[in-house]
Length: 181
Image 1 (cartoon, one colour):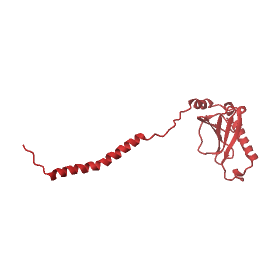
Image 2: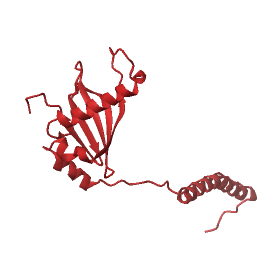
Image 3: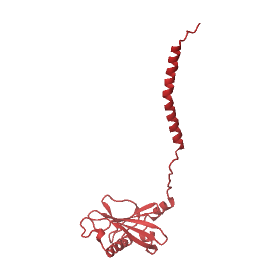
Image 4: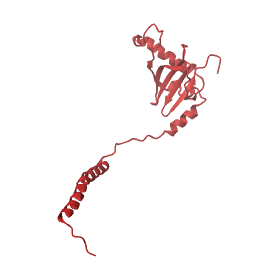
């Protein structure tokens, strides 16, 4: 069997078509090599992983059924701060225009309501008909900070419950009408 004689033109055509394919594939290889090396060379962003504070969460479970006086005794409170009050339609004076003495009276009233009119602690829950009307921050002498949301039923003027948030837990303290519990 003899090999056919190859002409120079036929060899040149085969060689040039393979060269064109290689010339087209070289940029693809370069781009993929660049992207691959860049993907491994880029530093990943720092991320912080938070872990649950199980002792604080178990503290909330231990508080269920207790009163505020037992959980945060008034003698341990260093500061009670009115964080804010939501503007309510129908008020004669805008909240931002109130005097400092009226804000202090409001903060004292809310603090007194929290300690005198609330029932036992419950697991957290806000009712559908409740809105947040004010917020207190309670700082203890030990340095613990508790955020208290004052809830009110729509259409009523007195607080219906307080929601206390601490380090890793949230509890609800409903307002008990006088004579009920």
